[in-house]
Image (cartoon, rainbow, N blue to C red; front, side, top):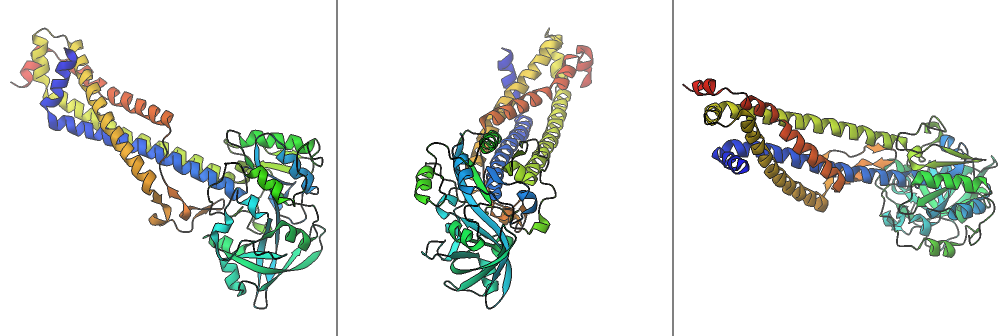
Length: 476
């Protein structure tokens, strides 16, 4: 009987009920959609940060990440690579040569950051070939091919097939020069990368720099379900126990692409990333990180140092992005709290006004023998019914918003974000969509329901304390 009366009371004053329901429904829908956008945006940022760093875990010479010095290398590249590939949780290990130098032509000489990569393996992280606008990505059969960033190629005034001379310092400290032929032009869409980065094969880079079996870095991709911190610990232990010895079944020859391709031919194909292996690495050594062991944020894992080698998770490599996401989370919580606080105050005020309008009604019920406590429960029952309806409508609106965002997305460039970069991630390339995390939506729904019902407690208490005589005189 109580619930039936409460339901009828709701629709006796349709305008008031619809006003309160719309306020709760819209606030609830905005909360859910905001949570979905945040989840998707943060997941995309984290994935892009790992790609920008060069992998989920990075292995390189001690102090390399702090200095980017060309003479800090992995001496036994093949042995270390084989040891890393044998670690549990490693899906792919990507060998790299990274060197700062000068690229020269008859027209000009420009600074360059040269990456020696194995294209078929690097595609597991970044599909660099997809961004080639002219020529091919190291696939023209030349012994010493080179792919230049679009702006760098423009400044050097070169075309496909032209010669490019690299001047760099080898790991022995000697200055060396090597001749390359332009095989392609790469346009990542990031100004700094396109002005500085170039790519060649590992074999060509090793010949040019006299690095033999040496490597600069090994980028590690973790298998699904494995935490990068745990994998980093196992890699550190494997390298410390004898990274120069290849485990049974491992392929020590980094120059054998077929075996690596078979190993990496799993169904785990990474989505195309617009970022290059590391924008942070694209800066000269003078702009490198201040400390070789940056304090990891709450989400990061501690730095791991093997003898002569350094093992970092991507969170340690790009702590700025982790910090940015934590700050964004905090601001998101503040915004939600302020938004819903305003809504709750509005609902409380509306309920109080409703109580004042219904003083004579409550007084009459009290005079007929209905106790004040029961009147209070009646008002709470009305609130619960209204909240249930509002949450149902808000959920439908939130799902509609989720489907629309997931289909069309929100391009950051459309809102004036054109050249903002955080830890090597071009924010203009980000398209924010929606991702539902059921646990978060359930928690948000419970909070909204409880908060809305709580907003009616004081008005219900006021209604329960009305004296019949005073209530009846209120409108006399």
